[in-house]
Image 1 (cartoon, protein in one colour):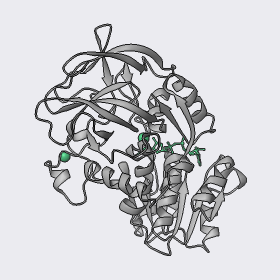
Image 2 (cartoon, helix red, strand yellow; image 1 turned 180 degrees about the vertical axis):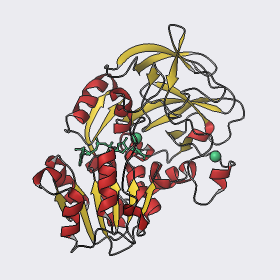
Image 3 (cartoon, protein in one colour; image 1 turned 45 degrees about the vertical axis):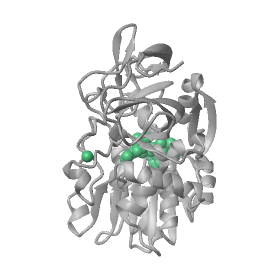
Length: 375
Ligand code: PAD
Ligand code: ZN
Ligand code: ZN
C-alpha cells in the first residue's frame, strides 16, 4: 500500500538536549510539501559534526534529529519536484545546491544561499515535517538522517547510481567528500607538495587520500591518538607524528621536519582553535596555504599574531570540500564505482540503527573511524 501523501510513523533517534544520549522514539513524518522529497533512509554514517551538537560545541535548536551522511530511496515527492522520483537511490546533501542563487552561479562558490546548516532547523516555510506526540522536532543541516524517513528540499538531494552500495557511498554525503575535496578542490594541492594533516579521523584520512591523489610527495599525519597511524599510512601518509611525543610546539616540529621551510599545505581536521593556529603556523610563511576543515565551536574566538599571515600565507575554510553538491555527488559515486578511490578503510563499524549510542561512544573513545548505521 502506497504511503505517498500520508503521514508515516517511524523510528527516529531524537536528541532532546545536549550531553544526553539519543532516544529512539516513534515520530510522525509529514508528507513532502511542494519542492520537497521524502526519503527512506537506508544507511547513515556518524560524523564528528553530529557529536559537536551532542557535546554542546555546536549550538542548534532542540529537540533535534541529527545525522547528515546518508543514502536512501525516495519514497514520495511533493509538487513540482523534477530531479528525483519515487524509487530513486539518493544521497541527501547537507549543503544544498539550488543552482540559481549568486553563490551557486559563481564558479568558485558552493555554500548555496538556501543552506540552513546550523540556523533555523526548519524547512524553508518555517515549519518542520517531524513531530513527536504532535510537537515539532527540528531538523539538522538540511538533512536529518538518524530517522527511518526524512524530508528534505529538492535542492538537498542528489540521485545516484542505483547499484551503488548504500552502506559505503553514504560517506560521500559528508566525510569522504569533505576531506578529499579540501585537498583537491579547496587547497588545489599540486604534485610534489608537502602536506600536513592535523586529525586523522574519517575526514582527515580523506584529506590524506586527496593529497595522495593530487600527487603530494610528503603527507605528514598529525594526531594525538597513535592508533590512527597505521590506517593513515595505508591511505597515503608518508609519516605520522604525535604532538604528545614532543616538547616543542607541533608547528616547530613540522618546520624541523621540512628543513625550516614549513609545509606547502596544512589542514586542520579536528575542530579546535589551538590546532587551527598550529596548522596555520606550520605552513610556509610566504606561499603556504592552511585549510580549516574542522568545525569550530560556535562560541570560539581566535587570537593570533598577524605576522602569521603578513608574509603571504593563505588561510581558508572549506565546507563540504568545496564541491557544488548536487552536481558533484553523483559524479563522486560514479568515480567510486569505477574504483577511482576506496571507502572501505574508512568504515570500521556497521551497526543496526538502534545501536546509535554505541556508535557515538566508539567515536568518542577514538576506536572508530566511521560507524555506519544500517536501517
Ligand atoms: P574524528 O573525531 O573522527 O577525528 C578527529 C581526529 O582528531 C581524531 O583522530 C582525534 O584523535 C584527533 N585529535 C583530537 N584532538 C587533537 C589534537 N589536539 N591534536 C591532534 N589531533 C587531535 O572527526 P571527523 O574526522 O569526523 O571530523 C573532523 C572534523 O571535521 C570535525 O570538527 C568535524 O566537525 C569537521 C567536519 N567538517 C566538515 C566541513 O564541511 N568542513 C564536514 C564534516 C566534518
Ligand atoms: Zn559530517
Ligand atoms: Zn544556491
